[in-house]
Length: 124
Image 1 (tube, one colour):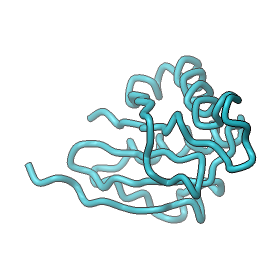
Image 2 (cartoon, rainbow, N blue to C red; image 1 turned 120 degrees about the vertical axis):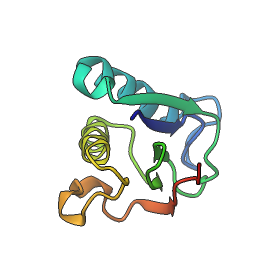
Image 3 (cartoon, rainbow, N blue to C red; image 1 turned 180 degrees about the horizontal axis):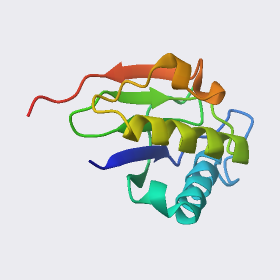
Image 4 (tube, rainbow, N blue to C red; image 1 turned 180 degrees about the vertical axis):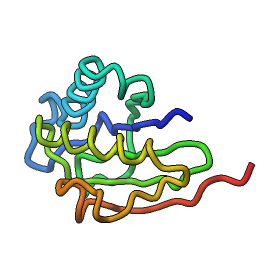
């Protein structure tokens, strides 16, 4: 079952100049490289940049979702290698579940405190 990582490519911090590369776009590019360098993870995860996740007060934001699993929105990420590693670790743990619920003890440190919302699976 494919996991989708939705990255808000329009996320930016209030202090960022309007014409600068947006941190959300930087994070999307970092995740693209992570997936390119990890074929096993790329086989399970599809990257989907999007224009807005409406978490503007908490950039950078991502959503993790999959059919028949809980979905999550996470925010307050920096567009850097540590975030990319954290997200890759969380995606691996999420992909290993059948319901999308990763036990707290398996959460990478970098996702703690960054959850914005959790959505139940759609009824099919």
